[in-house]
Length: 267
Image (tube, rainbow, N blue to C red; front, side, top):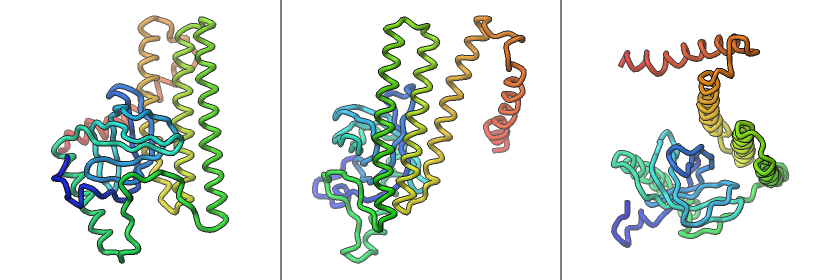
């Protein structure tokens, strides 16, 4: 990934909006952030989560119809604002896509007058960008309040989970409580991102893929848990709602088959 010293392109970062999915490991549940800028060696993402410097993360970046995957490490961290990531591992194909994306961004900047180019300094201290007009200023304040409120709520729910552990509540209840809190975290942050995008004049619908990914994650967890309940015999034909679930799952299977199996066979 590293180019020769002095290469101007490798030292520049360019503003670029998009969605970022981060995980501590490949099998860990995802959390989401907004892409702020990107270069050949790293990127900056906006997130209310606190991630210590040195934390290694698996990432998936969606920007300008480009999807990039790999491993990264947190190089800078600004509490409740965002983190700077350095790319550690990336496939040759994704590296070529990154080079094309950065080249496109660089070319579009060079077409602008000098005073209108949006090239990011090497180590900027990230702060929310000012909005023009009283309406956008109000949106900025609302977004900040929402972020703070979500952070406090999640902290309180995490403390409640620890109380459940101390009280020796059934592990199945604790596990479901933990999954519910994680869903609140991801959905709450998606709501904050929607407001931010809308206030900045960006396309807020960029947030929707994050909601879709969260639904897939929830569905996998629920399907795993229900399968375990079936194997243990705790769910039977007399369990309330089991027939409705069967019909919904059957319809879901038909829909998934069309895009996973049938479309693959057509190719």
